[in-house]
Length: 439
Ligand code: XLS
Ligand code: NI
Ligand code: NI
Image (tube, rainbow, N blue to C red; front, side, top):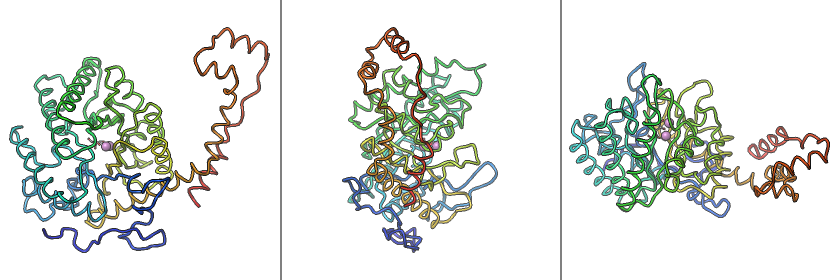
């Protein structure tokens, strides 16, 4: 197999003072942080769609990047295989062990689903053959149920029973492929599961159908030996105006309502959090405290732009606070999928590497600083102190749900008045965070 990324070396850790563009400054896979190697804390994954497929096309212009990887023509099985070869070389050079895929990222879709499925069988055989003897495997798979025009009114939420069958068929196949490729998870991102106007939409009907599709997926997955985690990836809007999986709280409520909460967790994407008006950490926290933090789509938004820009993560404040939640969660069932893409003018093979080095270093730095935050203990100590009044006998009774309004009112009457509670000390805490991140 000839080298595709010729001239780009194996990316190694050289430390913060290195100026080598092809070296990690913070990601040191073997370094032990809080008792675990960095590479175990950070199971990084490559998103097939952005890295192997997207060429920078946007609504104003054609692609700028050549993603043929040596194939004659795109849209062929030859090209599909070239992408596999390129992906393996790319991941090997970066030391990334996982990838995530949609069915149609792997092969060109045919008008006949039987033909598409045959192509998928062929390409996954090829992936297995080529990854044999490497550590490269699937993190999670999914079905693209938003690109094809048949899904314009949704997939699980479609009005058309035949379209619903196609969605089911794609989910069935994508779960089979995920199992075949050793995937740890199966993702549902509700691409067009939402609505534009209530004038033409029955929300409850659509949500029940989505839940039924997920139930069938769970039952089928379990029946063929899928032991991994099913994941919902919340997003509030784009492409639809209203998406049903608005944010983690909404998606968790949905899973509980339909009895799916034992098999499903959240796949939290940073840019989706900010689109919902939340911080990345908020979405991770809400998932974590509900026992629902499963995996992460690692990217970041652009504060000036109101859409899913899928930038590679560079903001180490965000990665630190994200890694704090991950450490508190005891890790993830899944991993860190770079659902991120190069900016359109960053159109070379070199840029693909620079982007991953940036993202991996940002999360490694975040991991180091999150561990330091926990070891430092000042912030957690303050939070504990903040709620200390609930350690009283009455406080404990309230915590256990054993108090009554009457007795609390009696206590208030006895007190007559009450002082304002302790200061929240936000600026002091932000100073500590700065101090830890910057030192
Ligand atoms: C789109 C989503 C998508 C999912 C997989 O915004 O992030 O890429 O991760 O379907
Ligand atoms: Ni995503
Ligand atoms: Ni996204």
